[in-house]
Image 1: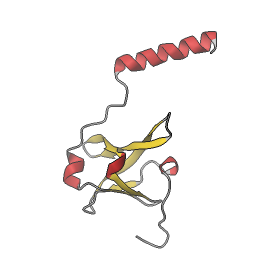
Image 2: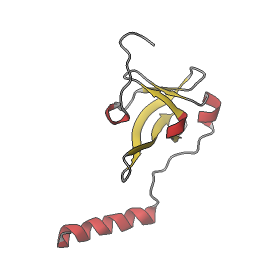
Image 3: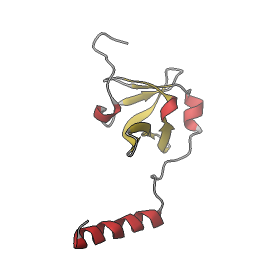
Image 4: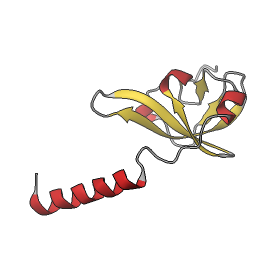
Length: 108
C-alpha cells in the first residue's frame, strides 16, 4: 500500500477501479456497489472480469481504497463465482415498471 492510498466508502468508488484477489492477482474491475436500501448496509459489489460480471458478497470484500478493492477470496474462488444477471428477474422488472407508470399517472 502506497502513501497516497487511503480507505474510501463504496459509495464513492469509481467504476473501473482494479479488484485484487487475496493472492494479489488482479481479477477484474469494479462495476457497481449494491446496498440493502431499507437497512442502508453494503450488500456486495458487481465486478467485471474477463468472463463477465460477477457478484462479490460483502464479507468477501476485505478493503476498499482509492486505488483498489482487495478481496478475502483468492483468484480461483473469484473464477468460480456465478455470473451476475442483475438482482431482479424479468417478471419482477416488468412489475416494477408497471408500478412506476401507475405512480406517475395517479401520484402516490
